[in-house]
Image (cartoon, rainbow, N blue to C red; front, side, top):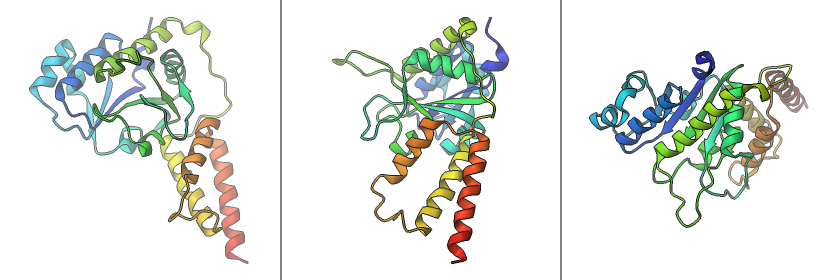
Length: 245
């Protein structure tokens, strides 16, 4: 049996959705698999009758959907953020397949809030948005016809979460500290880059992908709250040394 308390900590985040019917169909896909936490980042047309019609008996998810202005608002409090990505990136990111995604999401939802981000119908998530994610997930498709409808992608990943919940015995998470939340990571990055600028190691006018590569490094490591605290303390010590030369 799926634990509703665990499922309630799993957020499905739709970013910049153009067509309200896709929102309704995604809600229906979520409810089929027992998920209910729907977040909408700047939808172009919502609420809308077409969304309600496509949701069928999942209109309660639409009624309770949280409409927010930014991805940061949607992932606030989450310590695991996974972004859907359909194409290779210039700088590769730690990537999961759908089965790994379902297992990781269900496993970590036992201990903290998690979010899966789905991008716009025509262009997906931007590079900056994907850099807010701990992992990317790619759904394998036929190379000759790889386009997936938004609701289909939501259905696949929600199904994998459901499968993971049914095979719970093989999933375990053992760590001595909670993982850092998305806002703690963003604060750390702001602190890190300000210190690197002060050290004249990083030139924001000529970044040369330094910020992207450092964010990827820390995403791959999965910093916990204690590690964030240690690194912030280190950066503060560096600042004091610089300023008292």
